[in-house]
Length: 417
Image (cartoon, rainbow, N blue to C red; front, side, top):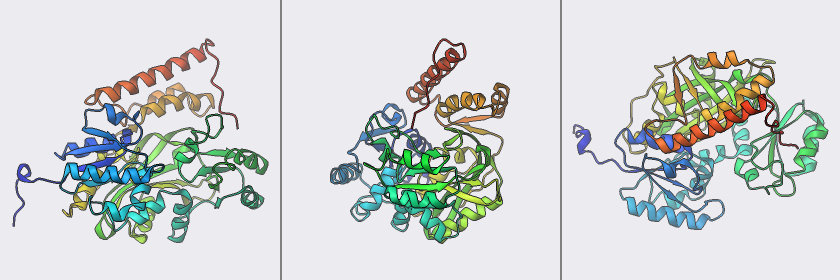
């Protein structure tokens, strides 16, 4: 039987879990294909609540109020009708879907084939173990739960090292006076420094991942952006190289560009096939300057900030994922556009002065990095209110930088650990 015309086809609605700018961009991509899309989030400050790209609903926090969240989700599905497609754009919702998959599956469409693997990848200590067991190289890494275990790692580690929480939200929940609050990672040059900094987390959040730092600059970091369908069939992918990161060296990319890197593409593809992955996944890796080995930084089993670059490269990973989930078996997509740079403005305006202050680039270098066609993560003229928030934040940061350069405002101290 031939397909009905697009206008006659009633496709199920989609629910994007998280309306931070990441999920908001996923909503945008689906809306362009005529899909009814709503967002959910437990943080009312996120831009999706001020966006023109569909309605967003404030939900209970699935970490702190899991039962209330499940009740909310069931009611939302019943209100929307048609067994909505559920697509996460933040780790907190990946984890919640994994915990409550059996209940949610009655009301939503998502990948029951892979949700357990996605939930594992959403947790740092479990994702590194899974990667190591399936042939994806990782730096020397340990999952610790006490100062004694951290001491054991430090005795044999090659410094410098870094420490991450299992989930960033664990350190976000620390008391405001705690130096680790709001950080994604801290670094240490010596064993003594490592133990001293870890002491800030141990009383309340002792679980952490510690690992040796992969040698090399931010410009040897890459992201494999992909979507896999039923049976772990690759539906689309592209590779981007990061040019800068916020914060420097250990943060997420602030500007990146698509590249062809068959080694990275093959390595990540083998890993995702090996774990029978289904869904959207970003894998961030770094080519170690000491031995040239590509090693895992982290995997994000969902639509991510950098994943937004894929659509501009010609690979609509959100749309492909949606079609696969509703049983349409879409044709795979290859990247076709390479002459652009993907910019996260609110990150880049912060990190450019840091790179310059460290002697890693000049203002001329920064200007040259913007000479290719630009595609923005957090600026969209068709979505004015979130975009105006981005502009205001960039102007505030830029004005502060100029005032500090002129000596009219003291330099902001780094968080002391």
